[in-house]
Structure formats: structure tokens, C-alpha cells
Image (cartoon, rainbow, N blue to C red; front, side):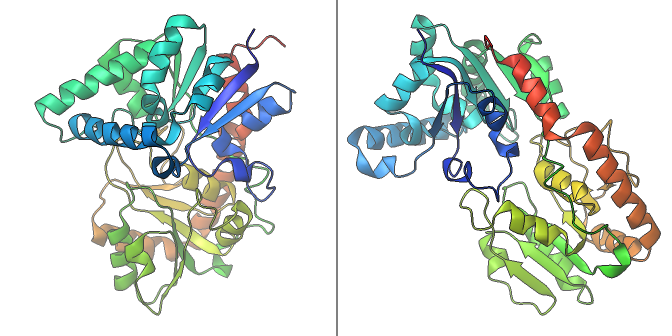
Length: 376
């Protein structure tokens, strides 16, 4: 008999946050919701220290590097494959891989487990098909691994509509693929005071993922010396800049450098949030956009091919999407929007309404419950 109803496999930095009320539950993908139902839930978390402590991990680290080189897929087997973790997985009715990189890293284990155990496996997808610029051999090996990964798992929840559509086209597994966007805790991401653009000055840039255009954010601040910027990131280039109009706060969610409560306070100081992005299929900037909008802070964001749900976000109504991602266009748009405070106030109100209606965490909890096999 299975000892666990659900086993969640997380990246680093999750376990310490579970009991901390200064962090929200949106990056736990239903964990808190299922915990409230008194289910038996286990957690596995990537552990970077493994690679230093065990011979097997050092061997796995070598294999990771080889597989990464020949497929350009991120493997972290050395951080997650242990006897204890294999035992947890084998004793689970359901497994939730909270991103595709973690799931692929456990691929050798899952091949074995699927042969001998009945386990329902759900994968949260964020960038699995983001493979531009790869040569023929790398592309072939990558697709081979992904096809096996898709075959072994039961459901794939895509957080971006673009990647979802591409997956359906390339792999013909519509029964396994579903689209459901990332959602936030709108009750938490709520400003204490109603947003009023005339009372705020700061332009916020926040985040760490590799699809941010950090250099462009710096260049915008250099050109717009009359504006106040607040950069919240652990990016080394940004943390080393010294400009009178820029305040830098070192922030990294995984490392808990700032709590969600502190991040919310930062949103409450900001007039707008800017998100210059690379044009990738991965839905970058999603959580920041939704958090900012939920707090009533208007967002200007690059309109990439990976924008997660274009049908619901009306340009100049819920947020501002830039089709032209050139530096001069960013500067021009920011100057333009700063002069139109009525429009900013309107976008703020519309954004809050959209989040409450379509992107609240309760909706995600309801949806993921449908993909998990539970006998209540």
C-alpha cells in the first residue's frame, strides 16, 4: 500500500518557506491546498550539497555534464537522486514535478519506477521546448529525451499558451497536455493603500531569471537620469552599478534574500514595473507581472512569443505590452506613460480586476486537484 498520497519535487529553497507566513503559496503548486485536506504529503527538494558529499553524486554530476552538453537540457541528477528519494517516489500515489528540469533529472529513476509501480505523474512545464539555436545532433538527442519524458509522465501543465500550442503541434499528445496559467495569492498581493500614480515616482525592475534583459534595464536607467529606479535582483552586473538615480536591493527568492512581505512593500512604493525580456518561448516575467498587477502597480513588458495568455491581457487596458523591444522605444514609452496619470490609474484598477477574476491561486488549486488522483 502506498504511504504517500502526493510527493512534491521542488527546486531549492522551498522547505524553509513552508512555515514562514511571510511567503505566499503560489510557488508550491497546490501543496498548501492539499495539506489543508490532511493528506499524506512528502517533499523532495534539490540539494546542492549532495555533489560534495557522496561518491555517487560526483559520478552523477559527471553524467549531468555529459547529458547537458549533448542535449542542452539541464540535468540535476546529482542534486536529487538518492536512495531515500527513490524510496519516497516509489511509495507515492502521485508525483508532482514542479518544473520540467526536475522531472527530466529524475528520468532514469522514473523509467525504473514506471515499470514496477502505478504512479500518476504531473509535470509543471516552464521552458521545456525553449530550444532555439541548436544543431542537428543536439536537437535529435534533445527531442529523443523529451519524447521519452512525455511518454513516462501522465499530465503536463503548461504555464504559457505558446509553449502549450507548440507541444501539441510537435508531440501529438493532446490528452496529456493542458494549459493553465500561473496564479498568485491576490489576498496577499494587495496594497494597503489604493494606488494613485501622482503619489509615486519609482520605476521598479525585479527578477533574476535568465530571460530578463538586465543590460537593457541598466541602459534605460542611464538614459533616464531624471527618473528614480529601484532594481531588485541578484544579477551581478546590476549589483555592481553606481548611479545616483538607481537604488539596488539584492533579491533572490530561492535564497530567501527577501520575503514576499518585503517584496510587497517594494511594489507599494512603485509607480510602474518594467520587464524588458528576451524573445523566448518560456513564459518569463509571469509571476512578477501578476504580483505587480495584483498590488495595483501597472506593468510595461516586452511582448514575447512566450507571453502566457495574450487573449486575456488587453494592451493599454490591463498592462502595456511593447512590440518594439528597442531601447529607444522603452524610454519613449516610459516618458509617455509618466505624463498620463489618469491612464496609469485606470490600468491599475483594470489589472487588479483581471487578477481577482482569472489569476487567483484558488483557481490553480481547483485545477491541479483535477489532475491528482485522490480518494477523499
